[in-house]
Length: 578
Image (tube, rainbow, N blue to C red; front, side, top):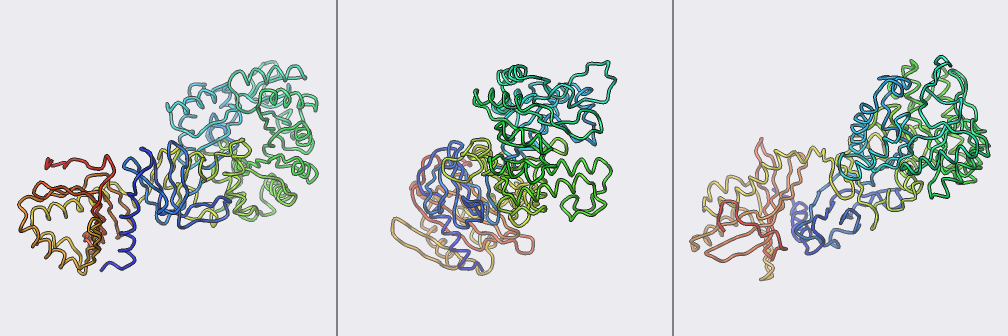
């Protein structure tokens, strides 16, 4: 028999879910645990309404008013958080164990690389990363600008892209390298030198569509050499000055203390990698408020490509003496960054490893000692602030409706971010993997619910009784007469049989889109109805609660209320009764 708690839930949905008003094509998210504004915990009793691509309300369900055009997603037992942000990606690259970097830049055609980038963008979006900062095309020119614009125009799916185009490198640095010096090979970034030369390069990239300027503040001069500073202080100052004059921020690739120091004093907004930084450079970053994107995922990937076995947990496990030196150095630097108060943001360097595996960065940040709340903020609020977008990375009124639904609490385990159940981009559901929303089962339950109404209209009470579980109940709220009643299914059917004996023509059907929630063997179907009896019509809402008993769905409770429906929900009987 249905419990009183189940009945209360069913009736609550009846009274609240269809309260009048809100704009058409709105999206109402109910039942989930919602990340709070501080990103430190979960709100259990709020719903989120998205309207015109932005979050309109975050409030108790009873305070949110919706109309016929609103789509509802019931997310009971799931966790709702803002769309994730990765501040360091390379959509025009793919993992180096598939093709080395030199071959990707020199051998693969631009058409192939761009086509692959389209697939990479979709994989990134489907992983819950709804915004990325694309930090260099690595020899693919301005393809990131075209991809950004194609995504923005809805031509191809993908995250919101902020493009850095070609990036800037100094003569005699960066790759491809290791070839006969007689040959002038193309580089993976734009070569520029001197104060005037770097200004020209920045201007060219801005004119071509850059959203950010990226500069390689250090690099290897020859294969096998360590990274050393490349651009002078004066050149870096000129790069930042020219970008700032056009309203663009600057990101600096830098591993070494000297390169970091030069870039920070020049005024860059972020340092990329920083994996060899010592205390003094990191303290300067903290003092100046420069953000670090540590790209731990790329460090792990490069170690694996070099022959490291990685074990079961890779770099997330405690490092052993025999593990690659690059990981020891990076972890030590990361721990110092935490100690001195550097602001860290999620920047994975995806492209070095698989696109769509961006959450690995967050798993490693947590494993290396960063507080879970700070890790999640690094891919939400903090990353949004780096981009100057206070309307991203938050679940708050006015924020962009980028949202991700996951099954488990990421603050407890960041592996819960993998394979999100639902991804929403600007209020549009782009991914829905919910196993509880299996389309065939949902259709079956809606059909069974309509079957109940059909049998009632056809006065086939024995067949109707067979659909009910033992001990089933019926609850009603007749608003126009201020009558509420809860009775057994047997008593309800007996009353219906007596009432319908006096009615010649009776027909009831589900008149609007049904909301279905399935949790194992328990399911709930909520839908508006239309009823015609001897020419008179009434409208309302039915809530069917089903339980799977011995392989068959049985009705354990039926709750209904009669009241006017909002415009658009008085749909004609599909079988032609109207």
